Image (cartoon, rainbow, N blue to C red; front, top):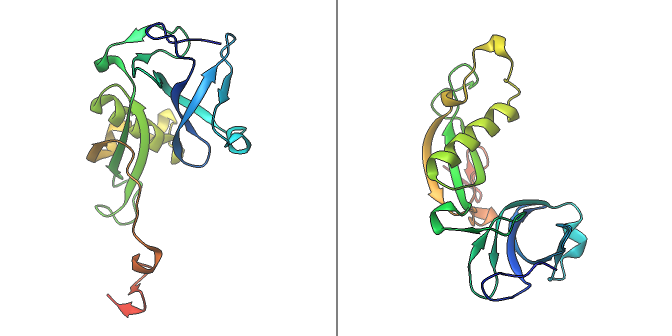
Length: 166
C-alpha cells in the first residue's frame, strides 16, 4: 500500500464520480489500484476517479500516481461552473445554461474544462462548424461542487409551483 510520505498514513481522500461527485476515503495499492475504506464498494465499481489525493490524517496533497507533494496552489480543487449557451445552439438565447462540476487548479482552468465538456455534450467538435469552446460564456464560477437542495415540492415545473400558479 502507498503511504503518505509526511505522516505514514495509508488512508487518503479521493474524489470519485459514480452517480455524483463524492469524496471517498481510500487506500491505494502499489500498482495504483484504488480500494475504498468505506462500505460503498457496490457503487465504486462504476466510479471514475478524479483529482489528486489528500492524506486523511495530515491533509497534505499529492499527485495520485507519483505521490509527489503538491503545494496548495497546485492541488486540484472542485469547482462548479455555469455557462451561457451560444446563440447558434440555444433555442432561446440568453436563457439556456450549462452547469458543470469539474476539478481544476484554478478558476480559469475550471472554466476551460467546463467549456470543453459543453462542446462534447453538444457534439459540436467538428472543424467545419466554426464552434469554439469560448463561445460558451462563463456566468458563474464557484469553488466547491454546488448541489441544489431545493425540496421537490418547491421546484418549478412549467408554470406551477407546489400547485400554485407562478
